[in-house]
Image 1 (cartoon, rainbow, N blue to C red):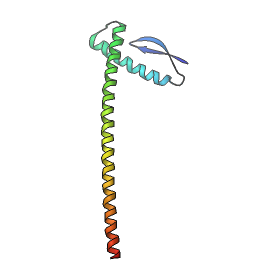
Image 2 (image 1 turned 60 degrees about the vertical axis):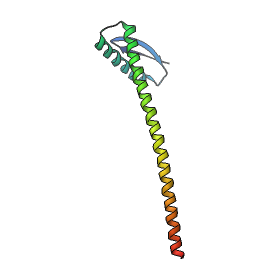
Image 3 (image 1 turned 45 degrees about the vertical axis):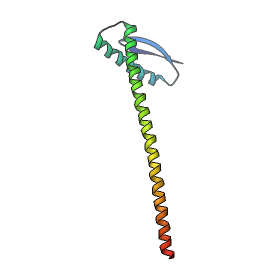
Image 4 (image 1 turned 45 degrees about the horizontal axis):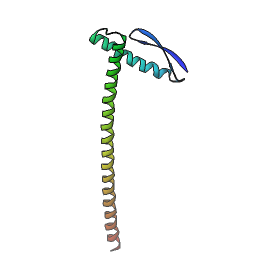
Length: 108
């Protein structure tokens, strides 16, 4: 298990992660640090625990919004795929009907 020192609101914290996940951990730590610093700028220093709590709640709110948007996008994708299938079936039927008419004209 790897150990890294991350910075949040100017303070170092040593945390562990699975080997190979160091870059990901550093990226999410930077994301959290930006959120905590923004909260600190907006409302002032609240104490580390409250500052971290507010930062985490804001990130959780963003995550919730993104999950909702993803669910809507997936629903819309499913609707469009169903519509595409319907259009393809109608096109196949139209081509089959045209083919039958052409065959009848050629034979007749």
